[in-house]
Amino acid sequence: MNAARSVAIAVFKESVRDRIFYNLVLFAVLLVGASILMGQLTAGQDVKIIKDLGLTATSVFGLFISIFVGINLVSKEVERRSVYPLFAKPIRRSEFIIGKYAGLLLTLMVNVVVMTVALYTVLFFLSRGVSPNVQRAWDAPPIDPALLKAIGLIYVDLALVTAVAVLFSTYSSPMLSAVFTFGLYVVGQCNEDLRRLDQIVGGPAAGIVGKACYYLLPDFARFDIKLAVVHGIPVSAGYMLWTTAYAAAYVAALLLGACVIFSRRDFK
Amino acid sequence: MTPAIRTRELTKDFPVGFWRPRPYRALDRLSIEVAPGDVFGFLGPNGAGKTTTLKLLMQLVFPTSGDAEILGRPVGDVGIRRRIGYLPENPYFYDHLTAEELLGYYARLFRMAPVERRQRVTAVLDRLGIGAERRLQLRKFSKGMLQRVGLAQALLNEPEVIVLDEPMSGLDPLGRRDVRALILELRDQGRTVFFSSHILSDAEALCSQVAILAKGRLAAAGRLSDLQEFAVHGWELVVSGVPPHVLDRVRSRVRSVTAITGDRYAIDLPADARPEQWLAELAAAGATLVALNPIRETLEDLFVRRVSEMGDGGRPATATRVPRRGPGPGSAA
Ligand SMILES: Nc1ncnc2c1ncn2[C@@H]1O[C@H](COP(=O)(O)OP(=O)(O)O)[C@@H](O)[C@H]1O
Ligand SMILES: [Mg+2]
Image 1 (tube, rainbow over the protein chains, first blue to last red):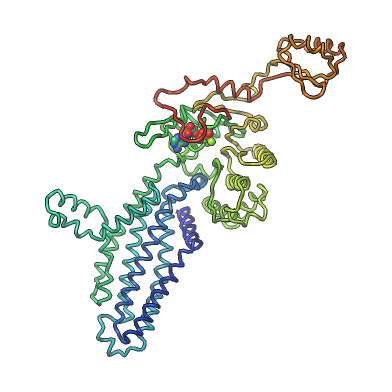
Image 2 (image 1 turned 45 degrees about the vertical axis):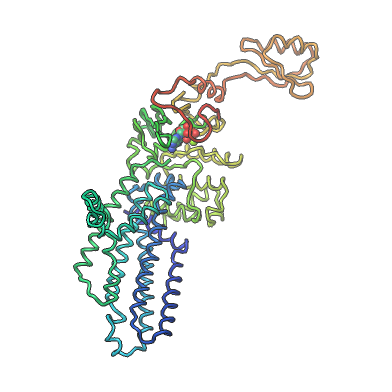
C-alpha cells in the first residue's frame, strides 16, 4: 500500500499544479456576492438562501471535479503510455487504482473543507447584526452545526461519484466515461421513481426493469439532505450512518470491479 | 544456472478489426533463454514482434499461451520488478514533472529511504549526462533527452536484468555511442542486458548472443560467431594504376569491377580465386595494391537470409496477419 500512497500524493500534487483549487475563488466570489446582495435587499432576512446556495455550490463544484478529474485519472496514463515504465516498477495495478482514487478523495476533502470554512464565515458575518429575538424566529440557527451533516453527505456523494468515474475510466475513453458517469448520476437522482416504474409507465416488465435498476444503481438522492438541514428538520445519526455505509459498500464494489478489470487488461 | 530471462512457447494474439475482431498473431511460440551476464540482442525488422515480447515480459500485455520467467520467477510476480529495469519504446513520462521529480516518484515505488533516493536519483542522472536540465519539466525535453531519462529510470534500482526496447532510437551518433558504452559498462558490472533493435550494427558491436525474430517467429538464435558464416565468400581487391586494357581483360574473369576514384578500382574476386595469383598478375601490369579484404557474411547478410527464409509459409493458420499500424512485417529494417 506504500505504492498506492505514492500514487495518491502524485494525484494531489497534480491537482494543485492543474489549478483545480481555483474553483474555490469562484465559490467565495459567489457566496460573498450573494450575501452582499441579500444584505442590501432584505436586512434581517433568514440566511436560508445563503445556506442553500453554499451547500448546492459545494456539491456542484465537487461534482465537476469528481467527474472531470476522475475520468482522466486512469485513462490518461493508459492513453499516453506512461503506464509502461510505471508498471515495470514494483506496483500492483490494484494499488495504482486505489492510489488514484485516494488521491482524488484527498483533493476533494481539501476542497470541501475550505468551502465549509468559507460558508460558516459568511454566515457569521451575515448574522452578526441580527438580534437574537429575530434569529429565534428562523427555522435553524445561522451557525448551525447540522450544516456539517449535509456537507458530510455531500462528501460521501462525491466519493461515490468518483468511484463510478474511476471504474469507467479503467476501460473506456474519457468522453464516454464522462457521459456514463453523468448519466448514472442523473438516473441515480430519480432512483425512487425507478422502483415505482410499473405505476408510472404501467406493465409488469417495466416494473421488473425498474426494480432491477433500483437495486443495482446507486441511489444518489439519499445523500441530499440540504433541504432538511436548511429548514431545521433534524437528521438522525442513524440515517447518517446507514447512508454512509450504503455508499461505502458501493464504493468498495466499484473499486473492486475497477481493480479486476484493470488488472486483466492489455496496454496496447 | 537460472537463466536471467526465459520464455517458453510464448504466444500473443491481438484482436484486430472493430466489428468482427479476429486474432492476429504478433508472437508465435517464442522460446528463448538469456544467460545471466549476457548482452543479448533481440533483432528483427519492424513489426516482427519485439516490442510485444518485451511487453509480455513486463506484464503490460498478457500471453495468449506459453509463459515467461525472469530470474527464475514468473513475470507475474510483482516482487521480481525490484530487480529489473525497463526502457519502453519511445518512452513517455509525465509532461509536468521535472526529470528529478519523475525519478523521485519512481524511487518511492522502490521504497527507497529519502537519503538513498536522493543519492540514486542524482547518480543515474549524472551517469546519463542530464545536467541542469534535470530541473526542467519533461515537456521541454527533446526526444534524445527523453530517451536518456528513460535509460536513467531503467537503472534507478540497480537492476540485475535490464530490458531495453530500441535503446538507440531517436539518438544522434554521439548519443548512440554513449548508449553503447553504457551497455558495455552494465555488462562489466555483471548485469544482464536484453535489448531489441532493428539496427544491426548496434548488435554487432555489443552482443554476445542474438535472436532474430521475423513475423512473430524465431528465425535464428545463438552466439553471433556461431550464426554468422565465417567462411570466406570471396575477396575484395582494391588496386590503382591498372592500365585500361588489362582491366578489360580482367573484367570477364571476376564477379565485378567497380571504379572508386581516379584510377582506383575495386575488384570482386570469387571465393575460389587465389588472390596471390591475381596480385602477381596485376603487379606485373604495373598496378599498385591498395587493400585486400576477405568477404565474410555480416550480420546484415545473415539477417536478410534468415528473415527471407521465413518466407510467407511460416505463419500459423489461426492468424491472418493484417498489420494494423506501422510498416508491414515484410519490410526490412
Ligand atoms: N495492440 C495491438 N493490436 C493489434 N496489433 C498489434 C498490437 N501491438 C502490436 N501489434 C502488431 O503486432 C506486430 C508486432 O508488433 P511489435 O511487437 O510492435 O513489433 P516490433 O517491435 O518488432 O516492431 C505488428 O504487426 C503490430 O502491428
Ligand atoms: Mg518495436
